Image (cartoon, rainbow over all chains, first blue to last red; front, side, top):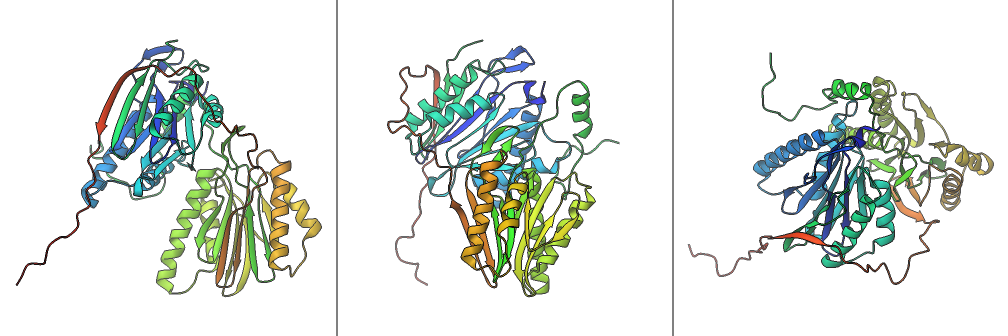
Length: 204
Length: 273
């Protein structure tokens, strides 16, 4: 069994028209046993940048705490929030630093940059950035997610349609993966508000 | 003797503190993670006025295509570009690092960077990690001494060649070069040959695919032709898009309004003395 299949996870982010959506499943397991059904995989770094971490849960939490620490230091020094591109470079550097003994997680970063232009990117566990203009996926359900997003995604969707698309893609993919699921957690961020929704999914 | 509780940002270089824990997990039977590789076909050739570099744009994670349009031609200096194959994080990190070192060197010396400088910096770094930093590079550029093209292997050995290919698609691309390369090619002939070599990699090698990127470097001028050719467009997109019959069921919604960003403009007259 791969190290990424120890806890199970599914994270996806999609770009819309001046908005983005990031979604994850809610299961935390230890191999085949489910421990929690409300695990938080997506965290807010600041109002316009979110990071979803899939992979080993302990590294997810440790990496999140380190990143929040570095962002707070940045805020104190620069007196402003980090741009999503800068934050992605920071995550990539922190992961590559541990190239020969890596953090066992794969981040998905989503944010609104200058002029409310949405930005998404994902990385492998050693920080190789993969910028995409449409969607990025990560986790044990990633192969199903690639297929579902490829079929369901269209460019320039508004917030409500984007929410529907990302939720359908997430729920249909985790239904085909034993290690992730138990509902969904979706954040849709536009320049004016953050809408956080909990989805009802199959609880098996 | 315990470390202080504060986690200060380190000075740089690799940190090995999670190695022991990862080894323990592997011994317990969990497989190590696989990294994003670039599969790849990367090529370079020297033509009459300079160097042309080419690359495909597929990034793979095992058998899955992770990125359909990634950039494999990395910037090193205004007159030097480098294509990278192997582990994606390694090629990006090593080219970024040497690019910064070259810029500092340019500030110190006040001169344009030479290709041989980039070559030496790269091979020293790769050799010191004995091949564990898995980056195979095709480095090309035009400096004061003329056009140069080099290949660098993950263990640190280098070759200086008039035409070069690297990556999993290198055999397919090399066959095109060996058949059609000649000295003194013009710019258009050179671009056509590079595009043909990359296409042969894209169509015959499973690790390479998607589009062709080309970079033409001549004395004092460079042209980065991103997605010069797109021989694999998506032709089966449904015009009416995807429609969902059953809407997603939502348990809870929480809306957080974001603060309005206010533009402050100076109104009124300046204060009098």
